[in-house]
Length: 100
Figure (cartoon, one colour):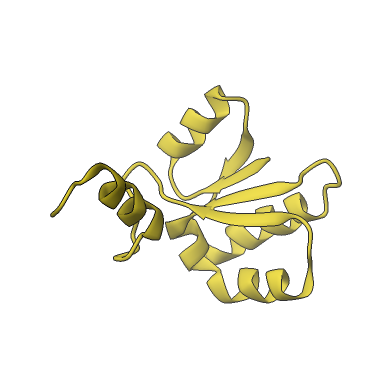
């Protein structure tokens, strides 16, 4: 697994869990890290924080449309999900009876 994060806190937290990665603050930096990770045969999953993904969403989506490997997943960072309708969060909330 490899992490591309827009902030150092998420990077450091996952690094302590054994996940290698990088911090990128521009679309160019995100894509440089992304292509390096995608071309590494030892990396099967690339996790990209939502904000880092937003810097290069179209290019990442184009890559994913034409490649089956590696798996690419967007993850929330320390600020939580940017998505208004986070289906997993909604599923968990409904499962335990929380209503907001």
